Structure formats: C-alpha cells, structure tokens
Image 1 (spheres, rainbow, N blue to C red):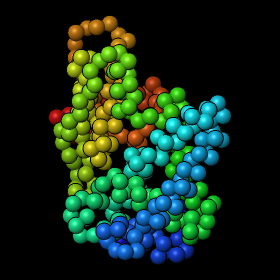
Image 2: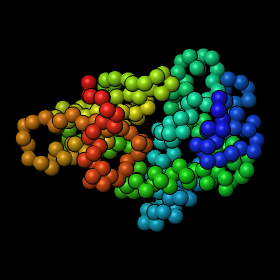
Image 3: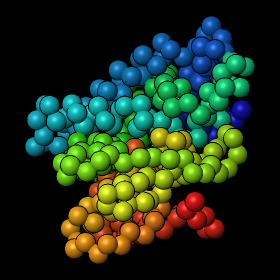
Length: 267
C-alpha cells in the first residue's frame, strides 16, 4: 500500500503516519479503527464548508446556506471526492467486508474521507485540515449554481417533472466496465412521456444515475421548450463529475452528449 501516493493526492504529508493508518482502518479490520476520527472530521468539515459558504454567498439566508451545505457534505458528495482520490485502494478492511465489496461502498468511502480530515486535524491542527477541505471544495463551488442550493441532478429532475405533472423517470444499469476495484457503471434514464432516453456513467450505480439524470434534465427541458415533432430524442451519454448540480456553459452542455471514452455505445 503506497501511502505516499495518497498523501500526494491530498497535498498533505503526515507527521504521524499512525494517524493516517488509523484513518484508513474500518472497524471490521481491527479494534483501532477510524470511527472516532470520522466523528471529528465530520465536525471540522461542516465548520469549514459553512465558513466558505458564508464568505462566498452573501445574499443567501441562513436556511439556504444550511441546505446548500447539507448537499455539499452529504454522503454522495463525499463519496465522489473519495473516488477522485481513488481512496478505495488504500482502505484497510476485514476479510468479510473485503469479499463483500466494501471498498466500493459509498458509506465506507465517505466515512474514511471524514476520518482522514480528523486525522489531519490531530496531526497538525485546524489550519491544515481547513486547507485540504478548501482544496476539495473551492474548485467545485466555481461550478455550483446557488439557485439550486446544490441539489443533486436526480432531485432536480424529479422536481422538474413533478412541476409539469410528468411521471417520474426510471433508471436501469445497462453495462459495467473495468476491473472490480475500479468499475464504471453505465445507467439508462428513461422519461417515456417526453421520449427521453439518455445514458450516464460513474464509479458507482448511484453516480451513473446522477450523470444520467443531469443529462435527462437538460434533454427534458429542451423537449418542453420546442414544438412537438413526434420524434424521440436521440440517446445521449454523460459522465458524472460530482453528485451536485453544476452550471455549464453552452459549449459544455453541447459536448456533454458525447461519450467520454472511445468505442463505447449505449446499450
């Protein structure tokens, strides 16, 4: 296990590598596990993200700030950050948890990320933990639309369809790609009433659903604003970057329809 690689990705080097080892240890592995560090990291994460939002969004009231923070620090968002760090390859799991695919489980990866933040705090203090958290979230917030309060794509799609009295979408896993430790899921999202069929890809089923939902929302909104032609929308494919709503430029939205990997076609 190359812990130096993880520290490089975090842009932080531990003085006490024992804290790093503990942060990566699930309770199924040993008695010295990461749950107390997770508790600490969760509190630090909420504090730092609250501070960032307070500085950045002066026009949002307390309720909106709270809802935006909740969407930014929820399990799915932390899971996506953990995936970017490829955290699964560093987990210390018990044999049973390992065999059951615990290294892919969103809850375990999200909890481990929080434990790492708690470990950094104990290792060198609040400012170090704050710096790591800001490195995660500042680039992300450059793409967040505060008008949606960071709601994820599935929620936004559901709200849009409900507002138009259109039945909710269905999601189906149509393919998986890659090795077991780094699988990518291809998910179909269907909105039959609007003739919408799109495909999303992500490192988990949920991530694939979010990617498909984001593209389905774009397609559904476009379908509602153009005259009905009686033709079904062409299938489109997108890949999830992070499980919250983002603002895309017109050029980005147009390019989102192309698969990110050559040779892959919707099933």
